[in-house]
Length: 351
Length: 278
Image 1: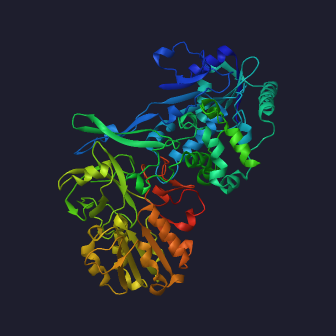
Image 2: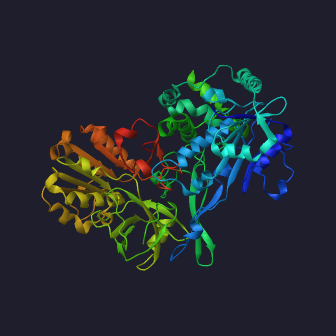
Image 3: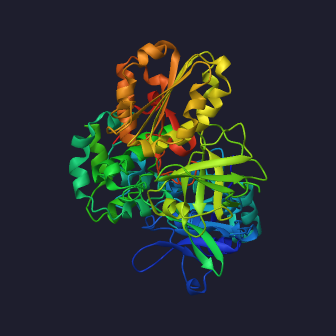
């Protein structure tokens, strides 16, 4: 049985201070809503954790796979081994929502799995402390329950926080989490049966919020089949026509992970290889070298690229990683300039 | 030179060109004599790049049996290949790899083998041909079909007689348009596939093809029409593979990433997914 504790507002602040890390990325309160940011940056000295708000509008993906990252430095005489190696200190992510943990599980399969692990992602994850928080407020676009999720985490964290009407319930999920609790000393006390009942009530309340906005809708096990069976041109036309090819959905998505490697001058007689986020929605994404007549793109039309994105999330990812590529966070819905609602696209296929 | 794949799969190694061979007006072969042999299976690819400019995926055209000597045959068709074509012996290139599965050579014992190339598509297939020629006593017939726009673009022409001189090996050529002095076939490569059922045992063969995607489409249709099953057809789908290890995402057909599950992939595996052919 994992151990559970209770902390007051002040106790929780002390518990978070007991986190030993060189970099702390946390969901914090902002005027325009909660956001993930680097707490140890000087400008963030007064930032308050956002633990009772809905999930932040951007996912914590950027802290796991930065938008731009140098992966090698070389000259014409060889690679600079030292500067081509990943380096990062101890890290902590605080205030992750259950959907964000699910996304990390997915990214772990992509970057740590396979025949070759990504050493840069691996270095960040190795020392990382994950502190999640239950959603006591649900965003209007959230639909985690439709894709097999819940608005609270039951595994995958070092510490999980449930905001209660007064104070917080803290669940320990790993030895590293336990160490933080021990360092916090009397900032927390052990939870009672009554505290656990209060947690269950809080969780039931957030499930009820989700029920009100998504009903009993569940993306069915047959979605994979349904998506692949539809005639491409007819099935995707209406939704794809609304897409303005801005790629915001892929950049905001917590599981989208495509990147592009390019080389550039890095100084006198020196070059660097950089990777940057890329998007399957963009026209040049698949384009190969060659004149247009040679048909150098396998997905020249937006409709086929739009379909490929949806198919990857709901049809290919289960085959590749045993997980859907969607956590139901709904961030792509508010990010979309074309007002495409991924819930409507899915429901359309299930009919 | 060590290919530092274990430590950092994205870091290239610098390799100096030992020789550049002019193959056709648009195709050159870049040769490297490597201190540490780059062992690859026929069909696996490498990322060959230009310092400061970028890299591209190319399947070596040299023999997998001689890994110390690597040859990569490249059509001039874009930014990186344009710069490669201006390089000379001694110039520094970037290399990493090998990546992908390679051709399933272990399946070929006792089988007939059909090899169909088009244009620079014969380059990856030459690595396979070298392998096949080294094991003819364990194979049935080996039938090589190759097409090009014109005679000047017929790749590796100097080697054709030597290949066809092997026991049970034949080679047939075609060019797209008639030319003075040309006595061979005229037309796209599918025109020389008409007689395939008389040349190999359709029930007991594998076919390997590489060329422009539009050619792969028509070759596949023709072979299915001639009685081959999708399971017997391997396509060399060299799309825009970048990372080489199935992470960057851009080379998918259905749930497969060509960089790790291909680039030579069985048609049966991909045929029901979208965007296989243009």
